[in-house]
Amino acid sequence: MAGASVVPTLLYADAKAAIRQLTEGLGFTEVSVYEREDGTVEHAELAQGNGVVMLGSKGRGGVFDRAMAGAGPAGVYVVVDDVDAHHRRAVEQGVEVLMPPADQAYGSRDYLVRDLEGNVWSFGTYAPGAGG
Image 1: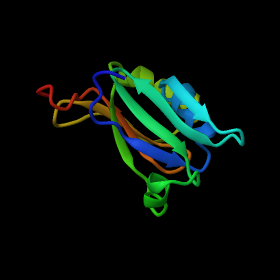
Image 2: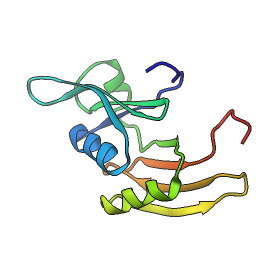
Image 3: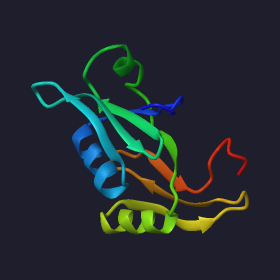
Image 4: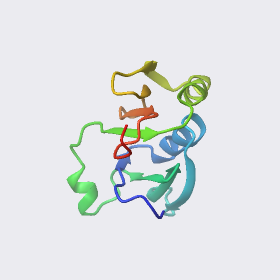
């Protein structure tokens, strides 16, 4: 995806469930999903605005999989235009909300959720590098 020069990359025990939650519950768009014959997600890309996150199944082998084997949950910040509407969608889809939408001292309106495997996703109006 052009324009995204920093791309979070996550591995999930159940990558298909993660893709469903991120698309249905958190509004990402599926760009591509490559699966092996056994259903293992080799590589997936999901977009939100001009950003993208890559993900795959844990235990698929390779250097990245081995390097991430003991990794704990990650935190990812995603810029959205309408935080409250985005939050309503997440609630309707049963996503675990850690913090409801709140105005922040640095000028953003944010909320936080935890995905099915413990990663923390922040959604807000603050666009890093855009001057606040």
